[in-house]
Image (tube, rainbow, N blue to C red; front, side, top):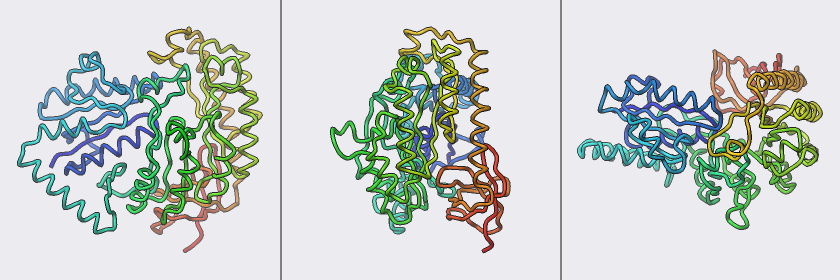
Length: 449
């Protein structure tokens, strides 16, 4: 029996893409393994949004050269943003030990390659196994199950990612996504609803709808449906407990969408809406399309419409031309708004982007690191204060898995909670009394059963 190993780095969309590839391989009877040395097939799902992520992928590629070249029967596949929408001849020339190049969200090149390599007799046996497996699933009330985003092996995850918008057409000057994942393409609403139904039938309790700009879902259709319509369509699915979506853009987060979030109990009060910088001049250079005042008003509207909301944001430090005064304004607006979580990144020029072609990366790395550390310390302080508000209170936790002998789950606001309990609580909603709170997680006690 052949085995595969998946290595994934980057965003939640990459995680969803990897589970899709795993499911397609397992339909052929190929089993997963955590040990690269016992794998017949290795897939590297890459990210190049940051230089650090690209460097890790390149290091992994180099380390796998002897793994592949010393065993001719093995298959090495490169996937994701390093490959892009269309693999380049230069990439193939640079890594001749890679057998298959796959763009983001695309499993078929690997499946085609494996089908060509399998002998007819083995392929026929695997397809018979796949057919029997599908019949079994249909007997379990999963008609037309595509299993697109779940592998067949191991436990069904409690929470799953569902891409709803592929690519991006917004083209911020620092962002490589439009070049690597292509133009914005929304998936048809009925297709997404069917997929969520299948996931829930397999045991998934929470889905997160994904898009580079998720609140632009449906814009390329030229009218309805939009994201609010999609949320309303999947909300009634029996067995689905929670719905999230990310990542949003300030320009497209309408009051109508926020009111839909507030009106639908299964949609969690958790909004991710990047600011990126707290200075209007820097925002204009980034081509973000809004001002700090616009963002401030948006945060006020979100908190007014969804009172229990947790708001997360993204910040890039050290963008070309960012002065000490520019950075101070970023620090000040974060201090003013007191957002619950801030995802931080140091700017690194991405080949092909406007900022790499037309702007000078003029903030020294040492200064980028210093600014990053300042915001980290601020974030830690703000996050700790939020979490400590929950001390001696009950929070509802969707239990995802065990971690170091404790159950691990998340609150509606996406706060991470650990607690001890001897019962099997995986996939259940549990009220936990918070007894300790730090910046990144909380710990508590569940009521006796």
